[in-house]
Image 1 (tube, rainbow, N blue to C red):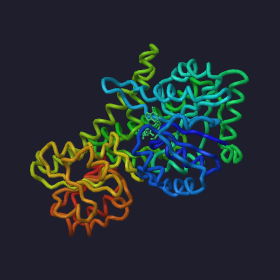
Image 2 (image 1 turned 90 degrees about the vertical axis):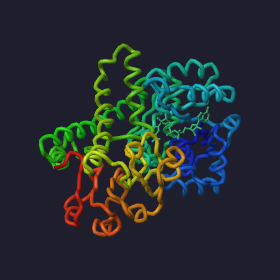
Image 3 (image 1 turned 180 degrees about the horizontal axis):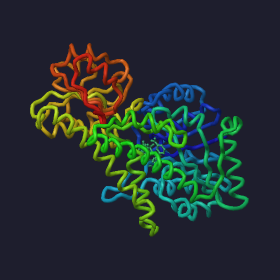
Length: 436
Ligand SMILES: NC(=O)c1ccc[n+]([C@@H]2O[C@H](COP(=O)([O-])OP(=O)(O)OC[C@H]3O[C@@H](n4cnc5c(N)ncnc54)[C@H](O)[C@@H]3O)[C@@H](O)[C@H]2O)c1
């Protein structure tokens, strides 16, 4: 099938390349000329495992191309819209400027029978409003929310755990659902759940999923706060409650909390939208989820400061990690970088290392010292703090070796990902999150 993908960021670039990899003819469109130039040359503009390979293959096959000209979307049977929906600068609601601009630019190029499939995460009600503008062209607007996880985006796009299609009632909606089934044929053929629903439910599924995941993380971080004043160990607690199949162990890792380009802004936008709908109280708990999450960053900073008796002034602090999570170079609302910047603000000399995110981090926070080589970064450190649980730090960093490089012996485990016993045995003063 001929497809267009409007917006070629973390979602759209992966979607375009993944759709080409399963046999479709795809044009990716973005207003960012540098991004399109890079994608057209076969250079992934960000780090995402497996993207480089499917991008190169797609371009070589002739099935994948990129453009800054919206007119190139004409002729596609399905137009996916995956532009950004960041938090507004002056509030918690989602900034819908980009979605509105993308759809308005697309409308003149639509033909009767086309499908416009929204993938961006949007406030419930958006699709119904956009449908009023799209329907007069004879095209059908549907919502097909995206659940990919950065770091696993290619796999999640090619082989998702479920597909959701919000469609209008009636024959147009049924036809649109059939066309999406064709787009996702390999997944549908292998029995991946394909849920057809109305527009509002499809929009809500996405924000509900993110609200639930954020809640699970903040729940265990709230338990960490209680553990900290009682001497309990939150990791043992998580293991013990995680054995209950109704609870499950995943997403119960206490630490410095969630960040990135999705969870924080999505729960805030959900709260803002619920308030607009007169149901603010229904998701009032999300404010608390957000507050717990932000407090964990304070806690990580406090653990470092306390290790030096109340001041990190002129201390060499090595920060292991900058990306908001491993297997990604995404630093949007990264708790790791936030902690690094706060320590710098307290007068510490902060050295940051990360396997993939240094370039992005340096652009936004040039005041920090960046070192590519992990061992070089550890040299002469008075304290070390792990803030992104890359394997390079979690599994591959031998505490005895680290001790030969650092000057001090304080290690703060902001992700509870280190072997505390091994670090202590190597002479380190180990401090975890919610752990004695
Ligand atoms: N990144 C994720 O893991 C993820 C997962 C699921 C859903 N989402 C949602 O997908 C959407 C996109 O997220 P992202 O992380 O890819 O953002 P991003 O910032 O990486 O990419 C957005 C892209 O849209 C482009 N754009 C903006 N206006 C445009 C226009 N008028 N026409 C064409 N292109 C335009 C930008 O130049 C940018 O390249 C958001 O709503 C997000 O919440 C993201």
